[in-house]
Image 1 (cartoon, rainbow, N blue to C red):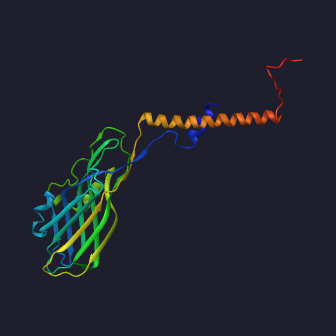
Image 2 (cartoon, rainbow, N blue to C red):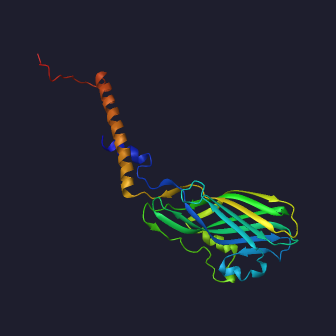
Image 3 (cartoon, helix red, strand yellow):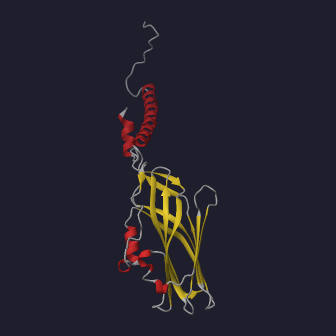
Length: 272
């Protein structure tokens, strides 16, 4: 009787809780580290705007972005930003822009269970065969996990710079993204929509406008020992109670219907 509930719970999966999830609004801040590349019809004359120190000097001749605007809003007043507004203007002259690449760096924190902090990255690339005078992009910065977090403690293993190259010759965009993708915890920009606007005066800059949301996340974590025991114990008790009820009903059915030979005795009655 006591082993049946354990056998059923164990063989129907989920008896020992190996991972669990919780919802949390991450604490995200744009750290003003960025890379914006505008590919034009002149292959040898792109526009590259960046604050990455390792390559800023090497691309100084292509840096033609005099104005950058950044704003982060907290709509529900919970002390955490909900959306980023990023805009940069590139002086491209008579050249047409056909493709843009944007890389932004963030400080990303989770505090509900374990205290997790990392420097994360958001990457967007969009293009238009016709080119244009402006591109507007919207998307969400989402958390991607290869492994669950711990249930308590501090986790700062990824709280290091994403841009590891120290010299320009060590830097390539693919190498940056490839190294970042090896992490167990990353962010990526999803739910992306872009609109290219045609027509631009040659004296006006090409404008890149980006609206990036910071939505609530479903975070995976490893439960603690007491939570594992609690969940297993509750499952066992529920199944044990059901097995007792079913056992009693089965016993009464067998005895009442004389399916096996039995003698009913009433201890309060005297035998005659």
